[in-house]
Image (cartoon, rainbow over all chains, first blue to last red; front, side, top):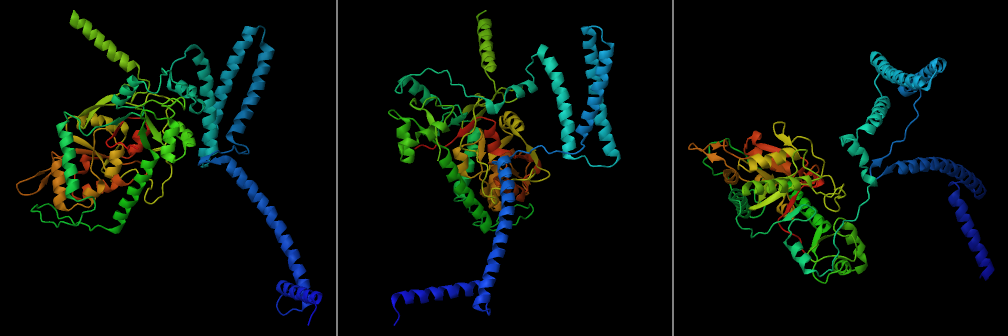
Length: 349
Length: 213
C-alpha cells in the first residue's frame, strides 16, 4: 500500500520515463535516451531557427506580392535594368546638353539669341534621342538579340514623352476636343458623381408616379415589354411564336430522341446523337446560374408607402440593410430617404 | 409657308434631340430604331457618363467548366461580328426580313433580359433535334423543301447568334446543331461578345418577363 505522496512520486517517475523513452530511440538506455532527446531538441531548435528565417523571407515576398496584386490587378514595379537603351540615351542626352550649353553660353549675346539656341539645342537633343534609339534598335537587330519587353517599353516611353511635349505646346493654342484630350481629361477613377439636378417632390406625388409608371424605359436603357402589345410586327412576332410552338412541341428542351428519322428527304443522312449526360448536365448547370443571376438583379417597383427601410425589411428581413439597396442604385437614388412610386430599384442579393 | 415652318420646327427638334446625345453608338450614329414584339425600340447607349454596371454582368468568375473562355472562332468559315456589325445587321437584314438575331440561351435567360429584336431559339432545341424537327425549324427560317425532297437554303434567313458572351458556350452548341443539319455557314454569324458585351456598352436591352417582388 502506497501513501499518497509516494504514489504521486511513482506516477511522476513513470511519466518521466515514458517521456524520455519517447524522445529517445528505441533500444537506448534511459540515460542515452535523455541525451538523444536533448540532442534532437537542439537540432529541432536549429531547424526552427532556419525555418523561421526562410519563413520570414517568404512572408516578406508574399506581402510584397499582396501589395502589388489586388483582384487580379497586378502592379508591376519598375525594375532596375543595368545599361538599358534608356541609360545609353540619357547619357547621350546629358553629354549633348553640356555641349550645347557650352556652345550657347559662349556664343550668347542677348536673351533672344539664347532662346533660339535653346530651341536649337532641344531639337538637336530630340534628334539625338531618335538617332540613338534607332541605333540601339538597329544594333540589337543586327546582333540578332531579342528586344526585351523592358527595352520596347522604354522606347515607347521615350516616344510618348516626345509626343506629350509636342502636345503640350500645341494644346496651348489649340484646345481641340480630340481623342487624346478626351482620354486624358476623363480620368474615370477620379470622377465624382455629381448629384442630378432633379426636382425633389414628395413621395406620393401622383403626377410623378403616373409618369414613372408609363415610362417603360428606365435609365438602364432597359425596355420592359408587355405581352399584350398591339400592332405587333407580323414577321418577327410570327417567327417568334412559331419557335415557341416548336419549344412546346419538343416538350421542353431535352426531347432529342423521341422521333426517328422518317423524312423522305434525300439529303445526306444525319446521325442523330442520343442525348448524352454531359449536355443535360450543362443545361442543368446553366439553369442554376440563371437563378443566381435572378437573385443578383432582382428589380422591384416602388409602391405607395414604400421606404428603403421597408423594402430592405421585405428583401432581407432587416430594415437596416437599406444602404445595400441605396448603393446598388447610384443613378436612381440621390438620398436614401427619397424614393418615388414607380421607381425600379435593383435589389442585390 | 406653313409647311416650311413645320418642317424647320421638326428638323430643329430632331437636331436638338441628336445634340443631346453625349454617348453615341458611333461617331455618326447617335441611335437607331428597331422593332421588338411589334414595338418600336430606340437603341441607344446610357447617357449618364458616370453610370457603371452594378450587379448583373459584372461578375468576373464562374466555375470553368462549364463557364470557360470561348475561342475566337466557332468554325473557320463562320464570320464573327461585333456590336456595330450587329446593329448594321438589325438595320439592314432584320428590317428587310432577310435576317434574324437569335438569342441561343435558355428561355429563362432570354426572358430576363435580351437584345432588342432577338428571337429565342434555345440551343438544346436544335442541338438535340431530330432531322424532322430540324426541318420544321429550318422551314420557319426560310428553308424550302424542293420537289425531290432536298433542302434549299437559298432563301433561308441569315442568323446572327449570341449568348451570354465570352464565357458562354451556348452559341457554340446552337451553331454546331445548325451545322449538323447543313445550315449554310455563310448564313451564320457569331456575336462572341454576346449579351455581356452589349450590356457593357450601355446599349438598350429588352425585358420580356420582369421580375417583381
